Image (cartoon, rainbow, N blue to C red; front, side, top):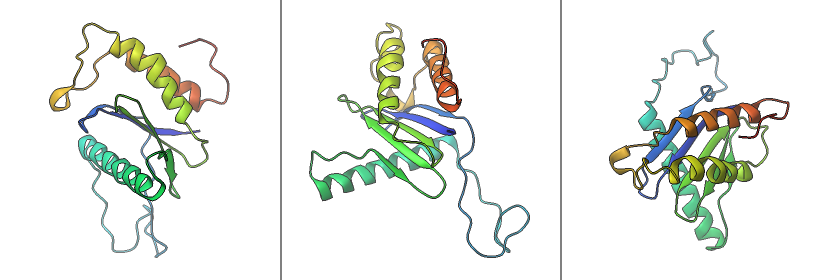
Amino acid sequence: MVVYSFYIFDRHAECIYKKKWTPRPTSTGSKAQQPNGLPDGASQPKALSAEDDAKLVFGTIFSLRNMVRKLGGQEDNFISYRTSHYKLHYYETPTSLKFVMVTDTKSNNLRIVLHQIYVSLYVEYVVKNPLSPIEHPRGIGVNCEMFELGVEQFVACLSSTRFCKRPI
């Protein structure tokens, strides 16, 4: 399994943590293509900034979550969606923190994995940290070295085919 990126959004729609490992593949049309993979006559697409990418991801999950609730009722939950190039996994905590992971299309549902990241990493290293702010105003994100190291190790264990030997 390939993990492309991971985001955490607070209840005020601010991205408080983002991490990218590999770039997400982009779709190309069925037209004739240049050697760089772009259709003939097309210019190189501009890469989004990290902030714009986070806004785009939040807008997508916000819209899809609302659509699922309107079509299925309040008890239905949005868990993930898949395109031909990637799969987006979603987990929302009772305190309205939103955990989002973007992976390749072959991955199974990662809702339990996102819950584990919340319980064993976020709560342990961010919530219980007396130096970490309770709210993250104006986009001030999670700044905890132990949390970042834990996420790196957790994703490395997910991405590898062998099981992780050390507990996180």
